[in-house]
Every structure is written in C-alpha cells, then in structure tokens.
Picture 1 (cartoon, rainbow, N blue to C red):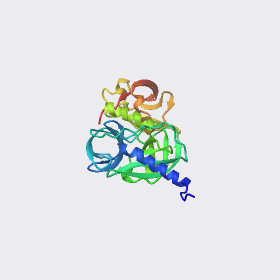
Picture 2: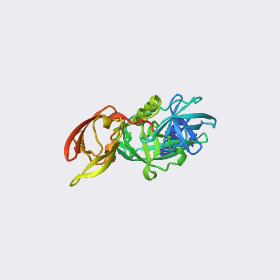
Picture 3: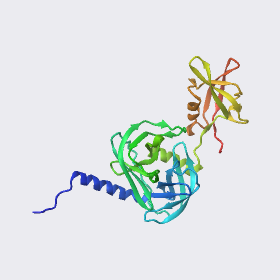
Picture 4: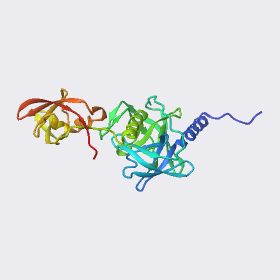
Length: 294
C-alpha cells in the first residue's frame, strides 16, 4: 500500500496561489527614487506602471528587476487624479501583464504582488466592496470602486492584483485612511495610453475662478471671482461678478462637484451656463478648454 496521501484542499489552494505569484512576479518590479520606494509592473515593452502617490516627487527612478539587477527609468507622465504613473525604461525583458477584464465581486479572494530587492512581496485578502464607477477626490474617473481587505506593505503599493484565477485585474494603491483600493485594469489602460501619448491627462478648463455663494433659500451658486484673459469663460462672455446657478439645465450643487466634472471627456464640449448678472437671468455657451500645464 502506498503511504502517499492526496493533497488536502488547503494544500491545493496554497499551491495554486504560490504558482500564480511565480507566474506574474517576473513582470513585477521594485522601484526606488531619492525619496520613495514602491512597486510597479510591466504594462508594455519598455513601459512600467506604478502608483503616482507612491512616487510623488522624483522624475527619475531605478527599477530593481527580479534577481536584483537594476535599470534606470524616467517618469513619462503622471495622473494624480487616478493615481497612475507611467515610467519609460530600456533593458526590461519581462513580458507585460495581460489583464483579465472580468469584474470582481465582493467576497472574492485576491492577491497583491509587489516587489522588494528583486523578490516578490505578497499580500492576500478579499474584495470587501465592489461598486460602480466613481470619481476620486481629485476628480479622476475610476471605472469601478473596489476596496480590498488586506494588509499592504508600503513598498508593495503600485503592485499588481490577481483574482482567484491568478490573472491580473489592476493595481493596488492606498486610499483615504490607508484603505487598500484597486485601480481597475480599464482605468490603467485608458490613463496609461494617454500618458504614453501626451505625458499628461487632459483636464477641462473654464478659465474662471469660482466661489460658492447662496442665491436662494437652500440653493447654491458659483460666483465668478475672476476671468482669465483669452480663456474659455472670457470667450463665452462671462463677467466677473456673474453667478452660475445651473449648468446644462442642472442646478449647481457645489463648486467642487462642478470642477470635478471637468474630466478628460469634457474638453471641447459646450456647456450652457445659466447666470445671474445684476439680478437678471443671462445664458452663456462656454466651450471647455484644456487646462494649461502648471
């Protein structure tokens, strides 16, 4: 009789998780700058994606490859609103990650794979919340709201997240109060493509400085405090002192919400602004411009 016992269910799950880590870890890199350490992954040949918040300052970085070799990289673009950073590098032969676009569900098991000194840095957990698309506090359009119940080490921020099939589904980052969030694959693909082409994400620009003001009982408007010369607001005939009470027929709820709506898709669109000017109702048609580089 054989004394060899069959693997337990726990052993099979553990082996499958370790195999998934081994399969993806060649594409996951440690990233070092003068001020920070994070992880990243090969998105395209010669291009690495990481967390913008994890590497907020420096424009040059060192990538630590699996095995410990290092190569230089430069920041090609960053988008703080979606927490996506794109690095350009040469000499990285690792194959890019291939994302699984199937949506995650609450309760699914996930793994976050970062890197430290050329070795995988792994955290496991569950999808604690799975919701629809949302806007970040900085106005970025995130394709799904996914929160992860796991303990992510600082150096693992920017690493890749695997679903229960062992397939990459996005990037692990820190959110408010150190909650671990997932930046979904669809967001990464959209933003990284823009950064690769333009070096930044275009943002809508009104050319107006706005201040919230009460206009009626229980309603809010946006008072125009200043108008940029040759900006979209000036071209539309908006004047200092005007109060915007509605945009495209929708009442103004708050100035931050109005500004957060000026994402990449807003550039070039025409907004119909309902204004109050010296007590009179005025309408202006404003074509949204692209925010100038800082």
